[in-house]
Every structure is written in C-alpha cells, then in structure tokens.
Image (cartoon, rainbow, N blue to C red):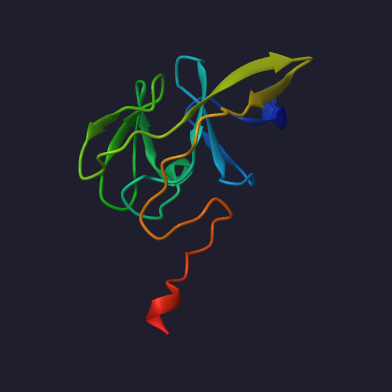
Length: 123
C-alpha cells in the first residue's frame, strides 16, 4: 500500500499526485469521499490531479475528457479507454492506496515509468 498523506492534509475538492509508476491521483471530493485513479489521462499525457472535479467526475485539463472517479470509465471523449481505479482507505488518519494489479491504460507512446517509448526504427 502507498501512504498518500494525512487525511487532514487533503482538503475536500483537492487532489494529489503520488509518484508511483505509473503515477496515481488521489481525490477528496466536496462531499468527503476519497478515490484513487491512475493519474495519466488515457488520451494524452496529462495529469488528472491537475483537472477539475465535479461530483464523481474528473475532467482532464488538456482536452476535457471526463472520467468517473468510482469506476474509471470514460464519461466524455476524446479519451476512449478507462483509467484504473485503486482501493483507498484511511488508516490511523492517513490516506492509504492499494494499487490495482490490472494493467494500466496509458496514452500512446507512454510507458509505466512515465517516459515516452522510443521507436527503434525512428532513428
């Protein structure tokens, strides 16, 4: 499990990025719910933690794709693939995230290390 931060350090309406591989975004909704998704939009390399949260949706700051915080499903294109969700719990006042074992859906050209993949034939 990953320790995100103290619950008191993440105000309702805010999100933080965990530097995992791939990165994970933890969201604290206005109504007090906690969610964790892969932080990278599946359309292009953009941080969902930098997006806008309304209800149980996050809007990507780059091209306005929307993802359901509960399921990771795409609610609005241009993204077509969902993002992984991760289990969140509060333990002794800290937000803890259990990373999903499913393979992540990353945007074209991005690897799990967060670096662009290199096409060996492009050289």
